Length: 216
Ligand SMILES: Cc1cc2nc3c(=O)[nH]c(=O)nc-3n(C[C@H](O)[C@H](O)[C@H](O)COP(=O)(O)O)c2cc1C
Image (tube, rainbow, N blue to C red; front, side, top):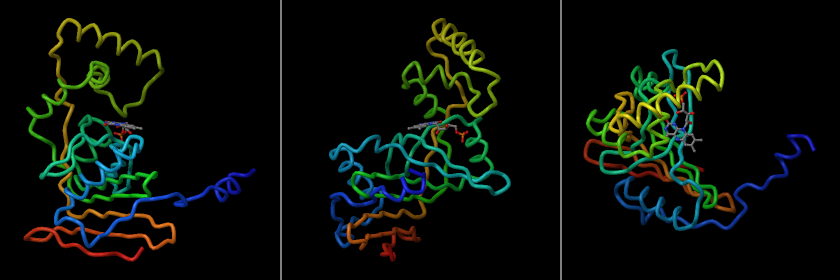
């Protein structure tokens, strides 16, 4: 079978999916996101907190990668990464981002557009210290996205950091940064087996949020 034949034989949005009534949606997108996230967790969606973060580099070229959503509150959507990584440098030069979630078991997609703001260093430090040891070791290396000469270099560096951390368990790297994506628009997309997909977009206005339906 060729890739083309394989791809075209795959079903898409053919399974049972929940319904979504946009007329009953709350006034705030964060409230609807929290509802959908809860439903995704209850439905057993795998890693519903995995999302794609899209950024642009200094030349305006887009870049994207998967990250974990760490929190959601009135300020926005939070994630954590290394400020010295490729994405960290891109964010410093241009903080405009998009987040996308895909909960395939439910035929749902959420798209967030906004600006990523670094948290107060004390917040990032606290977040770092609350991470499991393995994650702290990886972040302390501080070389995310740099070119790696070979796997042995990584093993040497990790062993070195493990020893440093054993001697000083409170070791922190300032590069670990929590970012908050402050949204300007959030779109909720619910698939429909008859292709009457529902799209509801929230757009930030001076006084709050405006809701509008979009053609699928
Ligand atoms: C499921 C999953 C979760 C991930 N979570 C994170 C994360 O929370 N923070 C992070 O910095 N990288 C995370 N990564 C790795 C990133 O996708 C990426 O490889 C890394 O951050 C380097 O990206 P950059 O070169 O664009 O800076 C995750 C990858 C996957 C597949």
